[in-house]
Length: 535
Ligand code: HEM
Image (tube, rainbow, N blue to C red; front, top):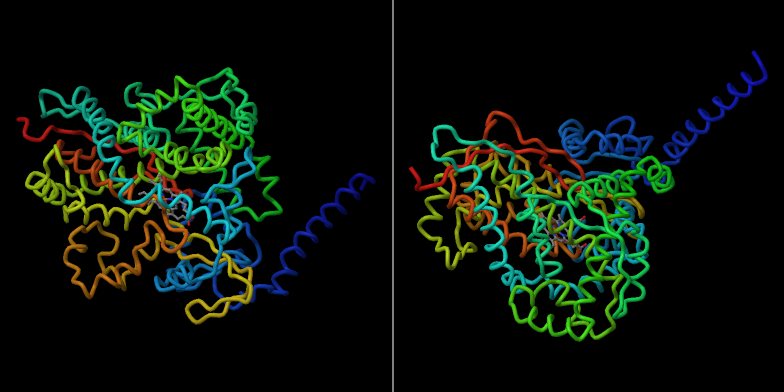
């Protein structure tokens, strides 16, 4: 063997030895005292199993199957335990529990802006302060201000569907993929909520938006918001694809152990760039909106703008007007980076799933339509009080929670006992929402089936156990801040869509086409629509 051959063999031997020691030594030392817990063999030694499960796009299903195989406590990485018992949710996520978000959330901190959003904030104290500040912008009362814009934006969707897909002869319905339409709708709605104006995607039938070519210039400008802001050369980016790439990247990086994250980001160079472009886009939108309030003429415009109820309640307007401090453009941008995603992706996928489930069962669709016809007046759609509509939505959120994984939390100093098991400080714990939503002990033998009636049949004594195992919006201090808005909009949209159309699935025998990342993503849903009451 040549000298080079010896060198190569020696290097490989050292690399293998290091790799072996790097996994075996921690396993033998067992710093988290997790050796006694069952789980996939590789997960005992390496974070690779968890990352591999993520890369397959079926991680929640894989962890669900691991629970079926190993029981209610499963070790899914050298430092992480998954609990499938619904009672563990309360112990981990309640207000009295002291667990902070795990280092998974570091990956959701913007690479472009030093400040963290509420969602990515891990320190309990900082998170509590931010939450207190933002709370008043997400109350049920504020959400109700968005009912009117939701109806008017939804009517654009319905007009488009009427003109394109409702044909004279209902014998040959036109089938189409409704995913792009619901995507445009969701972005337009979150645009109104966040910036006071829609992205007009339904009008343009495109999710292309203008973003600064030089994203860094827009970010730098955030630190120096003056009356005369710089203009940037812009280019068109697909907001849907950019956000999808950003979210997938955040999810993979979050599943990677912290010391390997730099390498992972280098591997995911394309999505990392998409994420930075997205930051530039949001920064530019924030700057534009602040500029609207900055000059004399714009103050006038803002005055008129604020007179409109829906604009008055827009997130940005509230922050701008309620803040006594000078506007922190970078803090706003950090928050909006999350809210544009959290407010569109989750609702979009939930709405698509609800359309799928309701259309899948003609008897469910008919019952819903009977309720809508009896009680819904277009002028005043009091959707909050419609029980079957509420049951359809709850059942959708049960079977299809947009955020469905075990939301990882870190055991604090001093350790913690979960379900009677002592856990040492630093251990990561989670309860997969996907799995507790399918627990047969709670939901019955038909747990896998879409049965809205289960919510109406449940007597008062049965509601408490159901509530313990129903966490689509999570629970406790870091639960979904947008829950009221999401529920209001989803109820309205479902009511408007199903009162107008009878919907059929083109491929009713096929399961939903879903990709499983941090937010579950429906990739296609082909339907046909028939105007109700039209022969
Ligand atoms: C069906 C729709 C929705 C579902 C299923 C949902 C679900 C969730 C869940 C499970 C969490 C906890 C995540 C975690 O701990 O890692 C969460 C957090 C959050 N959601 Fe939602 N969400 C929805 C809609 C919305 C909307 C419409 C908004 C805003 C407009 C929003 C904004 C947020 C924010 C900012 C957080 C972070 C809260 C915190 O850390 O305190 N969500 N959501």
